[in-house]
Length: 232
Image (cartoon, rainbow, N blue to C red; front, side, top):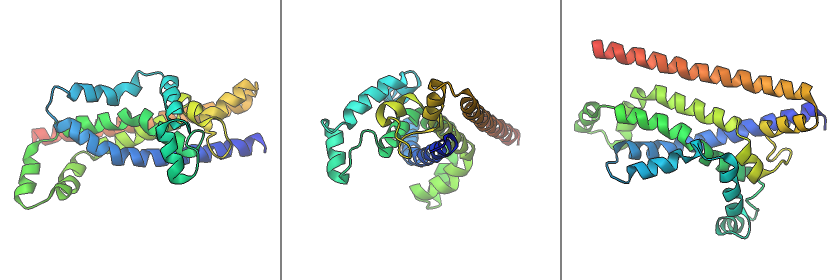
């Protein structure tokens, strides 16, 4: 396999991992962010710290403990192997799970902040009109916080694409299975293949810049709409 075909395969694996992880992050992160935004308890800061832990925790530390948990000798790994017939460690499923855990705060925190700033008047009015919780979410909450959902999606996706330590610890370097762009870049540097390393690095750099620019653009537009709404 040539370097180009190997890198394209790594790109496919990366995009697949990031897309699946981001979808699951939104499904799990939305109710978690809502609960944290509305929960009033002295224990709230403890759970917020757990969610935010990947922001300060070295990726290799998280990867090490996940590797132990995913091994066939540990209960999570045993349950997975019993249910699927496949080993969890060093599999595509492992890097998806690891990416979800490591990128969780990048999705939960923007949504939690948006939910905390959401007024109760609109929700109460919708409830008085007979709208159920799900209807209120899609007709009131989602339109008012759509910019935060886009931000959470972009940040979660971008962070997953750039992850290296966790993915390497629990996934290894299996072409077509767990070899992602960040690992491919490491391989090129280790082999002194700086031409391909430059290509991958420049691509990731440009993609990250575009995604962050999108986040700031959406944030500025949301702030402008909020100020106009307050003036009116």
